Amino acid sequence: MHTTPIDIELDLMGLDSPLPMLKTIEKLEELLPGQVLSVKTTSAGSEQNIRNVINHHPVKLLSVHKEGGVFHFLIQKETTLAAD
Image (tube, rainbow, N blue to C red; front, side, top):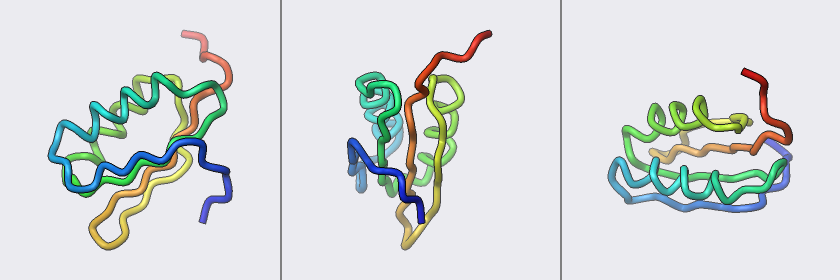
């Protein structure tokens, strides 16, 4: 289990795609550098959608797992922007 402190928890269980992805994007944009977002969702398409979001934002995926039909994502906003 990951021991990083969680700054914001986002419970998106029961929402259909693309709402979990859109709400995750909104929260990622609010995060300060170094802050950690926990996302829980039951939407089947969310695993790939949220991975795609992570690939296009200055964040790092700390962990992802599925337990009892719930996807758990732990995402940290990068402290510095990567150079292109």
